[in-house]
Image 1 (spheres, rainbow, N blue to C red):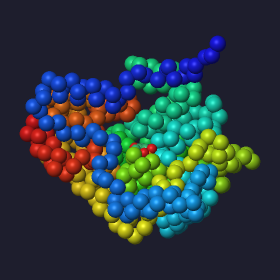
Image 2: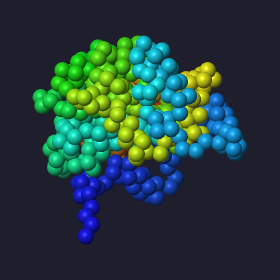
Image 3: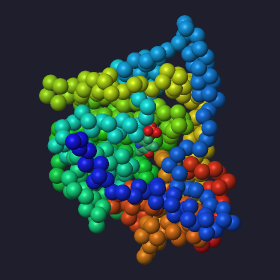
Image 4: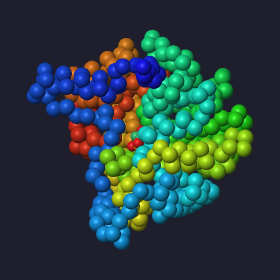
Length: 404
Ligand SMILES: *Cc1c(COP(=O)(O)O)cnc(C)c1O
């Protein structure tokens, strides 16, 4: 008789975005005349840039000829892409990351969910709270998180590191020493960042305690401040303790096209065993590779035209971010984020929890955002708005909120 992996059953049922979807659908049904503005989207909305479309077209044409046809991609990804990434994202910033330390994938969600596989079952994980839910959920499925307490919405074996306005969204070193530390900067959902010296302290902490940092830099392209590092490898000693996850989704619009990569330096070892070798083994065995066509599109992201076009897209979203940031401030809310990330994080008014504020905004302003409590217990009393809407809608939403 077969048995299921009952760790899957431990995951709390209702997923944040399905609850939001149901609430919005019910509201629309009752109020068909109301025009809803969605500022809850965690997905890009601008089309792929012309340089990328051009690369896709010509790669498709290559697939039509026997001489230029491509079958299975190499395990780590095509060298043309890994070389380009190593030069542009790392070597140009003075970081010694080589092309063969880059593993091309179909996105950072998969990588952030799968990376835990190469670590021992009894690894203790630490996460920023609130944060992107994939890190905890994937460890739940792996049976690493203990029991769930619905009252506190926490797992018994997860170390939560609160990141709130009280500590300026900078996590403190936990009392209990973790084995795996998930850091996400610029942060989803709070839009907060760490300075280079703050991140350096975490790298030193990990090296001293024999921990590994899994650093999710999916929003790297949105960084505008000088002292915010673009990669963890800007920090001294990161090659022996850090894995970095990157994505083409939020900087280049690949959420539906799918492309990302993991950086795993060869100096990251457990005794004699190189984690690089384990991840390479996993890639070779359990992964089919991102399509050639998509990897060619990824290469175009780094072309001169591609860089210029994508800079414009990021600027478009960040103009929305500043509209939201200024609008909410004017309306009297306590806000943060929105400077190095497409996310604006706000404190809900006194007496309103995250979900009450969601209902309030939906009913009174017909604006949809995301309740902060959906990203972890410390997100309660907070709310996330995103810059991925259109400029016109973003302006209109702020006018409505200011009138409340
Ligand atoms: C959107 C997002 C990702 C997902 O990236 P994909 O490459 O589209 O899978 C990863 N991490 C964070 C924090 C994100 O917000």
